[in-house]
Length: 84
Image (cartoon, rainbow, N blue to C red; front, top):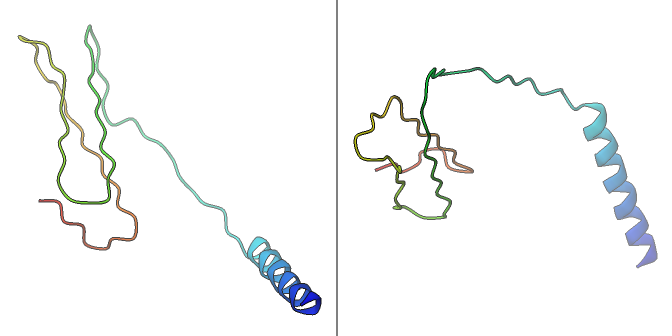
C-alpha cells in the first residue's frame, strides 16, 4: 500500500506541476452599464436553487418610477437552460 500511495502522490504532484506550467491568465473587465443622477433608491433580490420556478420581486414605493431593471442569470453545467 505504501508504494501505491507514493506512486499516486507522485502522479498527482506531476499533474499539478503541469497544470501550473501550462496555465493561462484569465482576462476580465468590468464596465458601467447604467448611471443614475439624482435622488433615488434601489431594490435587489436573488434566487438560488436547483430546479425550475421561483419568484423575484422589486420593492418599489407607490408613486415611484422604475428607471431601469436588470436581470442577470448564470447557469452551471447547463448548455440549454429552461428559462420559461
